Amino acid sequence: MSTVELDQVSYAYSGGGLAVSDVSLRIEPGEIVAMLGPNGAGKSTTLLLLLGMLPPRTGTARLFGGPVARAVADGRVGAMPQAGGVPPRSTVRDLLEFLHAVYPRPMPVKEALELADLGGVAGRTVERLSGGQQQRLRFAMAVIGRPDLLILDEPTAALDVQSRRAFWASIRGYAAQRRTVLFSTHYLEEADGNADRIVVLDRGRVIADGTAASVKRMVTVRTVSVTEQEGGFERLPGVVAVARRDGRVVLTTTDSDATVLALAGAGLLLDLEVAGAGLEEAFLTLTANAGDPDRDPTLTQTGA
Image (cartoon, rainbow, N blue to C red; front, side, top):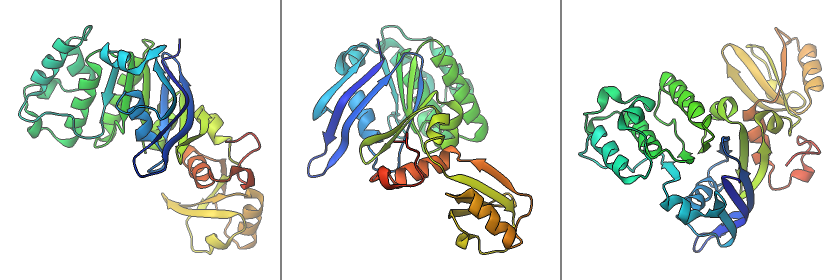
């Protein structure tokens, strides 16, 4: 039985076009799935549909083979918003103890505190927490009920690098117990490194669904990089983007052979590196051309 089933689901807000259009999606127990998309792509609407906070206009949404509302009422779904949802003037421990009493099969408060790395601030009130600590508290509040489906919206916003690493280690351990995790993020490197599957939305539609490696293979763009130097890199054949990182010029190109030959001809071929598209390049290419993928030369024939 799938954890999540969306069958041709659509939703439109009053006075606007379709925010989600004919989305079909299956997510299985134990999967960690990243949902990516530019602003306005339909990510938040899709998550709200799965939380039972919006009704589908067309199609059906089911969790664990049954109605979304029943799964939520049974405590099988936990949600972590990007902001809000943390009552003021309460201590961390008081909030978690309250939620512990609400859920039918909660984890011990001490376990939730350890999972979210909040043991040292358990007696602190919410308004005295840093932004990162408040984000970790939202995580603890989402997970204390031991939900079988954990839905996270930008979960590592405001976390430092060390906290992010600890967070994803906790998520992988949680999913290893055949619990499902669905998260949205703008940190593409986190999706690349932690998700079993990546779903890309644009303009309310699913335009890619697969492993990070398979999504990268959907585009034919490459990156060509050389030691940083002065030059008209933007004018080289095939180049669609130029960036400077860590002392190198990184060119995103649709024709790496032509770009390399032009670099050589211009005397700019210093410490050359050529690589396939990373997730960021694939994401930008897919979303930039989602409106007409059949005419886009940077998409493979088996692409979106």
